[in-house]
Image 1 (cartoon, rainbow, N blue to C red):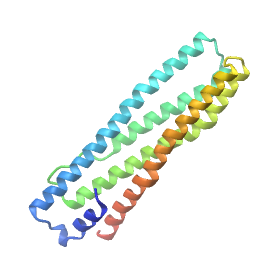
Image 2: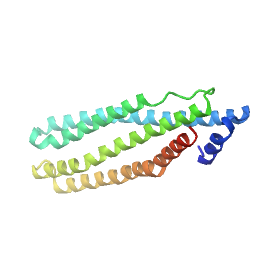
Image 3: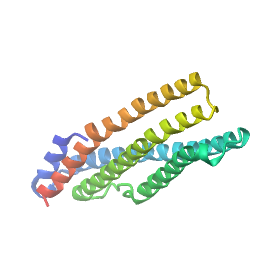
Image 4: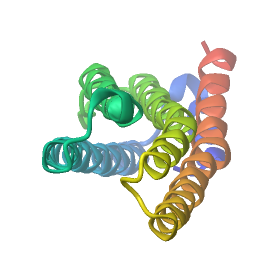
Length: 197
């Protein structure tokens, strides 16, 4: 939602708008909240499909290649970090605000938008934390597999390049979304709440 538009609506006398303008504002806000909620639901579904699949694949690899704990502990820690992240995302989603109602006041609507933005920031920070933990663990796991002879040098190089591409691509998107979009939006909404409380 346009920050200037929000500021104008918030600063209007007693937030008293014509019925038409109030309805337009409510419609836009509801559409934004629903769109964001669907996006976050999609992320949760993706995470809770991929993490079990990755866990099953890793378990199958360990059994089929007879990899012992000394070789597998970095990969086990990576899987644990993924499960912790998935559960943290589920908890954040459950704590996020309920959907907006058309009859909500402008104040209630802005408060819910701020709550939703804070929840999205926590999600992005959680994902960023997973990436920061995964970088040294994955690097060490690739090195360990190469040293033990379970991975040939060219396979290790390919795995390293793939991992680097994922880190740069996904990590860059998370950083952009967090610092260029969500944190400024969160600050703006919180400033509105503070200024006009």
